[in-house]
Length: 257
Picture 1 (cartoon, rainbow, N blue to C red):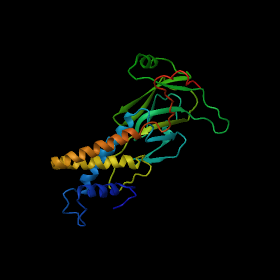
Picture 2: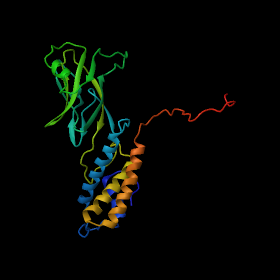
Picture 3: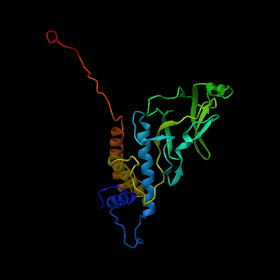
């Protein structure tokens, strides 16, 4: 069994080990086909991703993208980061297809003199009175309000009032959401560490036993998933913290120093 855990195939091998069902060389006698296991791995990846996302102090699965970056491939499709460049009259920007949650959106700081455009982007819900009022306001301000919405053809960043200035390059930090991965895909650059993949495997095994209607094995698998889920929740907290000293009780007389 592989120990590198670099691909979906590695995870299917570990799941088969837990299910006591090695892959048949002909691929014809297995109760659990590779496609069925991949389906459950993807479910587990989404479950674990959501666990990390629920902790708002966590900073996992974060990608930095600048409007000056070259064209990149996301979920098998080309995406041009130049879509994040704000131009005169712009009121909506196309966001990457793997966009999950906006963490930061700011003008790029000059690498030569450290200067930046005097432009501020602030967040407010699109259905708020402030946003609606700005939709009827003339352009030309240094402060713009924005919201992220999900169009039928993908996520968008909506700006109000419409942008009016010279072309502005921006930098964005955002939470990457998982794709539906295939058997040939790898986990390189996806942000899932070994602790998370342990939980993904436990979820997939549990889902298999739930589908197979084997109550005795399902109970044990549910327990394993619960344990690994709890470890993920504990581990995905802030990556840097400052522990404050806490004194409980009182200092007896004569012990002051």
